[in-house]
Length: 420
Image (cartoon, rainbow, N blue to C red):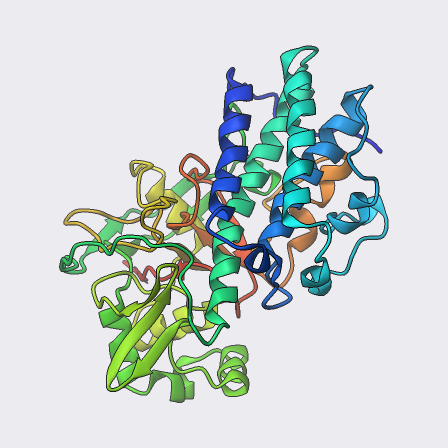
């Protein structure tokens, strides 16, 4: 297996061992409220069991770092190579993704033992004989695990929503009631803008190379669309009016019969929403989340606006402070915008109207990591900004997330745009 990568010669955090320990511990903390049965369930092919996430992220360190770079390392169980590979075709056969919920064994306890085995070996590797390549591969593994921390939350939320009891993932406090600020518009000048993450810090291959784009003058909404605003679309029969929908979107609505964002429940003339802390009254002032690209685009058309391109979003967000509502186990839901808060980062991933495509001059990483992002550049749409389930420190202005346009189980929301 080749371990040579085409990656930026970036400086990696000097305290890599500490970050490794902290990030790995957070994954297990996110799994802690769940029973063994909870951790094994797979509610749909697009989601994975929590136990699988814990094992796959461990497989990643074992496969990319320990086997090629730690000469005395002995795999915990060679059979795990087949069970916990995700989509790396170059590594051979793997267990089918839709059947991950059938892996009742190894048990959750055995997966934790697997993590301990790999963590001990990683501590020895990072304690001596480190190279720039080893440091970079470890950073890649940590960024990869942070992505799976978000998936642990979004996937278990979907799984618990399928249970008629609508159980809570954990007890978390409700946010104090507050009103969303009035929506206003921010103007951005047309011109040439630099897009993409620069060398010098970690960035995924799909964020590069840095390049210039020409933008016409545009405006972006000052905050995310709220549930109250989206309710007006529902009450105006937005889900039953084809003039607002793309052809594929209208087919999606017709085939699924949806009439509201995912996890919304209409009961006794009131709306409720299933959250990670159970069924709660819908807060009309919080950002609307769990909408597909189709719904976001239809809402924008209904409102007389549009979605921003990913380039407009980045040109605006690059000058915003990189702070927001990120993963906090005490409150795992978007919050109402404060006065003057733009919500560019955190709270909800923002759908853009941009297809997920390579940047000019894009080259995937070499070796195993060549399959990390580039192979998915088809039939997906770009989202920006992170969400309330994204770990703090994981997002940057150039970060590109991507999902199929029908995806609804992520914390995905809406920011409006228009031509200036």
